[in-house]
Amino acid sequence: MTQPPFQTAVKTNIPDAQRREAIDTLASNEQTTGLKVLVRISGLSGGLRRQAVDGPISCGAHDLFDELAADRSIAPARRKKADR
Image 1 (cartoon, rainbow, N blue to C red):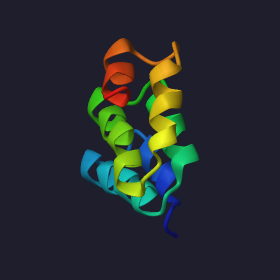
Image 2: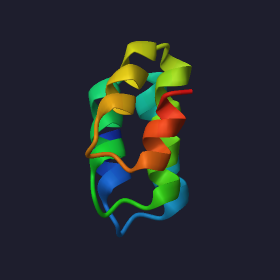
Image 3: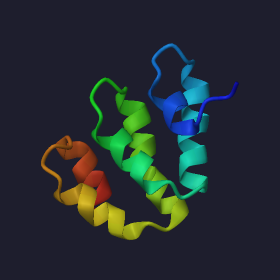
Image 4: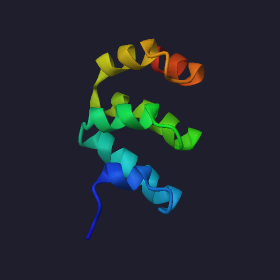
């Protein structure tokens, strides 16, 4: 059985290539809630989090950038990227 993209993205026993594909799927399906969680979640590699920050660009969720840029629980580098 295939897992939903969000579950694939957060599972550490899944190869990074599949996790990146799952994040792309979240973005293409405009699942901004999942992308927000991925940006905020601890235990996810920096590269995967950066990819999740880029997700709203492809799905046109520019208001999400404002929310992420203002969230102090997110690392400063990712907040800065969201604030571009």
